[in-house]
Amino acid sequence: MFDYVLTEVHDHLFEIVLNRTEKRNAIHWPMLQELGAVLDLAEQTPGVRAVIVRGAGTGFSSGIELQAFAQLADTFGDNWAAHMLNVTGAFQAIATKFERSALPTIALLHGYALGLGLELALACDIRLAGRGTKLGLPEARLGIIPDVGGTTRLTRLIGPARAKEVIMTGRMIDAAEAGQLGMVNVVVPRDELRARGEALAAEITLSAPLAVTYAKRVIDGAAAIDRGLQLEAWAQAHLVQTQDFQLGLQAMIEKSAPQWQGK
Image (cartoon, rainbow, N blue to C red; front, side):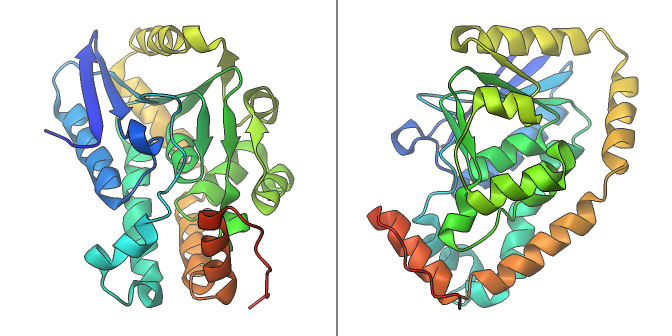
């Protein structure tokens, strides 16, 4: 049914598996659309009480596929960069579905969870990471910012000062440090990750479903997520039209160091 995502249902649990292993589960627009459709399917499946999101292969996700920027014209028109508010809004809407789903969502991270991949995980309610997993939001090294909820949700999780350090440096963070910062709930041995996720989902099902849903709504409603998403979209609409973004994109493709121009 889906080209880039696998699904599995068992014991009140709906599993969503990112499955572009040949691309290190890099996310492009068609894959993101499938993720939204699969979450809809989970919510419509009788008996499902929780959703697990994980990646097939060597890691959770390496982030947005760099070539996807060129492919945006297919969906959003040749002049997509001039209408970045609409593009960002479309990407944000799908990630936000995971946060606003009536079902609790649990992300299982292994190998690497970077950029848009980490933003997807941040939109989930709970994150478990296997030891040695590398997490990061490297967008600033590309000349842009995390604009699919990453800036807003990371700030909510770990506070402004730590979020600024993570986002402004764009550095990789080991799972152990991510646990200390509060980016992930718990770090476990890699071979125990799926079992721990399923055990957590099973524990959640011991609570009343409506109580879980309403608790999620109240907790998320206490944060100004919508305002943050609007600010992300505003900033990105400017940044994608800068020379620095073009330099950063080319440098990342070529694996070289960009010479920033500040314009």
